[in-house]
Amino acid sequence: MPELPEVETLRRGLHRYLVGLTITDVTILLPKIFTGDTNALIGAKIIDVSRYGKGLVMELNNGYSIAVHIKMTGQLIYQDPQLPQEAQVSREKVGTVPNKFTHLIFSLSHNARLYYNDIRQFGWIKVLRTDRIKSLPFFKELGPEPFTGLTFVKFQHILAASKTAVKPLLMNQKKIGGIGNIYANDALYLAGVLPTRPAQSLTKEEQKKLYDAMETVLKKGLEYGGASEMTFVNVLGQEGLYQEHFLAYGQQGTVCTRCGATFKKSMLGGRGTYYCPGCQK
DNA sequence: CGCTCGGCCTGTGCGC
DNA sequence: TGCGCACAGGCCGAGC
Image (cartoon, rainbow, N blue to C red):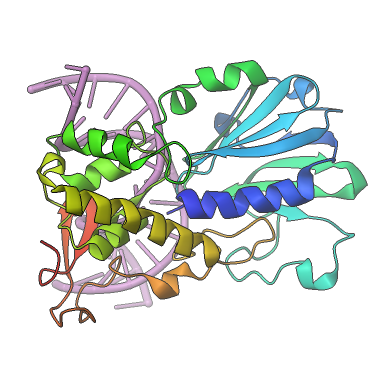
């Protein structure tokens, strides 16, 4: 579920609260999610937090960085005794931290802490030299992102070069960075394009509609603080609201407000796929 | 090379 | 009520 809007929501919170803090200790509770040398962390100050696609990078002042991918169910929760009470988190989806899903804890200056929780344990945290981050396969092979590198012309070329169905193409991080199942379904609905359409079969008009729709749904997701359908929360443990505004995702059986047909669900590339058979062509 | 599919995991919700 | 199973879907590696 965490896609560009969710990870960007998380990045903004991490940047706001972590930049300037020093890491005083690290507790690893589930070793398999962590790689790197913890000695590179102790005493280092966090100077920046960036996002590349669905990946996060926390840069330190000693030449090292912490790369994080929260995959499906990862959470980064910040706790700080100095935060005002209302920021101390009303969090149905988190409860108290640490909990049985807490796999790593960063102790920070000012007695603050950052907890990494992950129910399904798919996520990872890697410490390596900052100049080596881009050599990690995930970052090295990441395609251009909407809003930044992905121009309409590039998008046209990516579509034209692929015989595959358009939806799996949108979700292919090597082709386009940041889009996952929720926003792929919603963008295709907004553009009026069926998920199964061969990517190279889109007309120029459809390409443009899809390009604009992609940016529209991602922007909307970000404005609502992401989708918390499952376990996503921001750095204070608070849920986003985009799940209340899904266009097509999860809408099977409901009536399309645009044409009156009933949303259907199918499987495409092993993923739940939601579409309106009436107005997506 | 490009694509598809299974594996990694656990919780949830369904049918029986 | 309990059990088994399908499903959730991001990424990676194997295989076609």
